[in-house]
Image 1 (tube, rainbow, N blue to C red):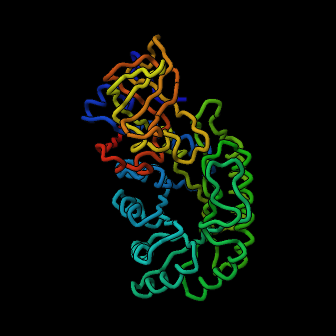
Image 2: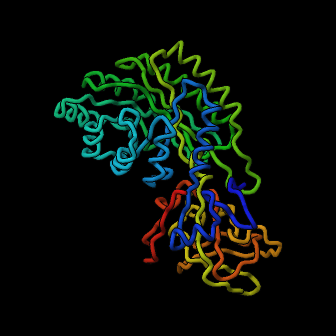
Image 3: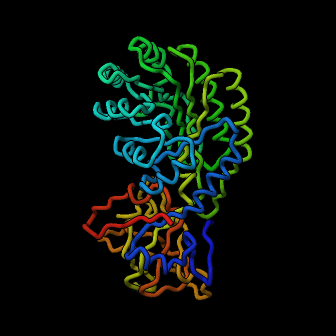
Length: 401
């Protein structure tokens, strides 16, 4: 499952042996993100996407400033979800014209910041409209808006469903005519629609179906829009494999589907740019979480490898970030990956809770104190999605290599 190479039995990250990288970082635990893998993923996706399709990075997946700066030079735009993320994106050199700002609870100050910065705001509430109109008038700038739609369908088989039924995200389809009329009445700069049905999906047919339905809905809504559709964000949802038995997403049918939609858009929405917004799919497999084994214990026949990292840095790997039944992320002993000596062991952290488990009874290379435990698929929803202040342990660092 790992995208990383191995040399002399040791994991290679960013062209460096893991043990040497740990010395360079100067501490464990740490996250490391591989530039080469990030570039390769974007390049492969570019090959699969239609030429007219724009690719945006949803930086909520990983907002590390150096990584965002790298991604800003590889993709066409950045999607942010707070004023804090907006600052990172602007500092990273992202073009404000290609930044979009989504979120169900934007504060008035954040809306004003977005107007002042000239970015596209994905409207998710009637409440946002007069605030945006006031800011536009005050600054003498257009308030660029798209509308995030809560459709009456969802992305089947997705890890997190973001549409269909009652949701805190977006505007219900049935409320759209009134909202679009208000956008026109207030003179806001309408640009298009944002539809995001779900995330972490490995079923190409489900993604294609959601894209088709999203496009058809946008066509219907365009009849009520106060201006031509210039921007149509079809969302993302592309998943990566985490657990045994999961297969990588097949891009071929998605590519064919998007090509068809791109051709239809050229005829039916001639001014619209089609956008795919991805986070986890772009960065998730390019990252590892590394902690050092500080103790080796045997309790009633079960081996526990106790590390200096845990759920406070990597909540998702502990199974406490959306999993109903806990499953192991792919884990190895990074400086002994090819060792013929194997054992069944659990990798746990230093926290005073039984939830602090990074690997539960996995077959691993036999490890000793000082060895490096590695959690793969850790480039997305890692450090910033974890309770770093829990129990007051030292902070984790991140490096881009």
